[in-house]
Image 1: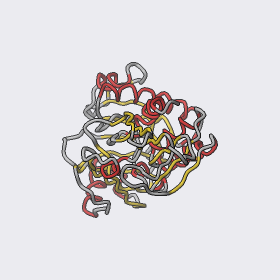
Image 2: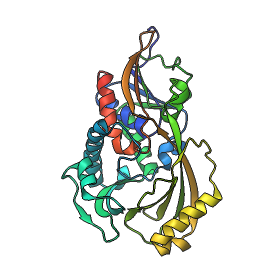
Image 3: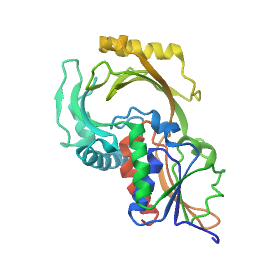
Image 4: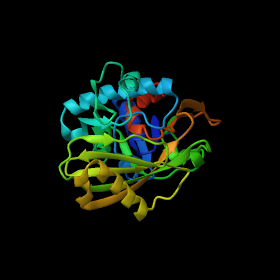
Length: 311
């Protein structure tokens, strides 16, 4: 295709797109990242974000992607705070050791918790710091970042290889009606001194209960509302989130609210990670539909996508 200026254009500036772009650039490809939104306005920026496979399929593939990502996060956490990644102990409610071992084998030390769950140390990522760190790592590897939109079919992307990391936007851009939103709402409060995280038992309804400490901030959650498109915070939902979290740790009740966040998880029956040859000869590699586990599988998926790109 004539007039192509770049080896690879990655479309999408969330954690999947940025990580994929980093992997490609560090493998020697000339990479441009196109993003509709600045990193701080992406769905990824809203995430908690704990390494744990949540609302993502297929399980067999997710297992490998998640383990590869776990290895990267352990290395990043050991390297200091710059990446936003830390290994932090917490409690998974109503979860048995076998479930953790099913995802991580013997990689993670697990012990019983008196509340009926398990204690385990997992990667906890400050997403706003991590997304900025990924962007700088991409630029250091020779990549570029440009804020711009694309049309269905990606006609503006005139590279030989285009990687579709557009998340929920793939619904219109591919188009793929199989990808749909699962709304998540969070409340950010001043951290009253908590250093561990907790995910309470899940009854299967839209209301979830969890908290994640990030320095002087504490992220409280949350919701999982299928097929809800609104990104406006609901005050009643926010009150319920604080109330549920305070029932677990009473000191949360008096914490000053700093921010409300809403994100739409791009859920699909199965992650789409596969190449497609377009009629004009371009190679389009799809990497979307990661649900609530984009962080959990980002590096594994990025490396597989890079393989499809020939990098």
